[in-house]
Image 1 (cartoon, chains in turn blue, yellow):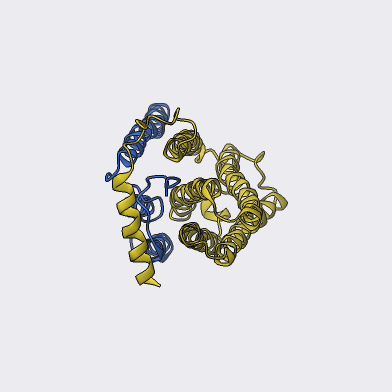
Image 2 (image 1 turned 90 degrees about the vertical axis):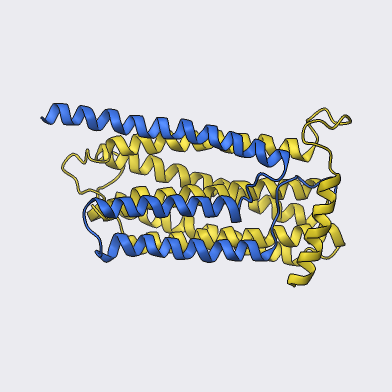
Length: 106
Length: 222
């Protein structure tokens, strides 16, 4: 057992639970995008929220991220930092380009 | 099956509580300890995340620049993306099954038949995903909508192709692990290697959630 890696591990149940939830969320995303039940900006907002929730489901049930072990906390810390950089890289790029588009078109 | 699992996992918890604190074990220089190795691999995944983030940012900036060619709403086929999503999501679960069986083998010295079965199923599902993506790409290129047609298509092929290359690398890695498990069983090092491959494979499915949402579904819903 000394070779185990300290990740909070799950059995079959964890993977099946994650799979079912992820499947439902994916199906909901496709339904929202293709069904035409929503319109305008609400479609994009709902899709973004569904993706965010599904990413959290994947982190919990497939990658088994947790705070119970010291290593889990290190994993979480690095993930939080990565998320910060990610939001800045994507978010600020989009902000700059759309703002400059608005200036040039207007 | 669930009974054996729960008893096994409580065994594991007991072991974990006896485990020394991560990073402070005196007999290891930090290189050989499985926790350090896996944390190192996790750091690699985080840098990979940033690589994907820059490709996503590029796509977000360029996707409106279609240079007179059709955009995502005309070019994307949501049914194909739905099939890809199903294949990759199912493969992430079957890899999880392979891990559960591999840990069981390492504990009980049982045969590796089920580990190999689930690894094989994972490989086939992943290969199906790559085949669909190649089919989509070759169809677009044959219709004259290759990466050279517009800035939108350049960034689309770069982002989705980057993910597809990662999945292809994962498939090669799965093949190697199938041979390693077959020859060596699921002893110490093989088990930690499988664990890292699992992180990689689950991570790629997580990236795919962003790809199908922010590239394909946003494109279709435009």
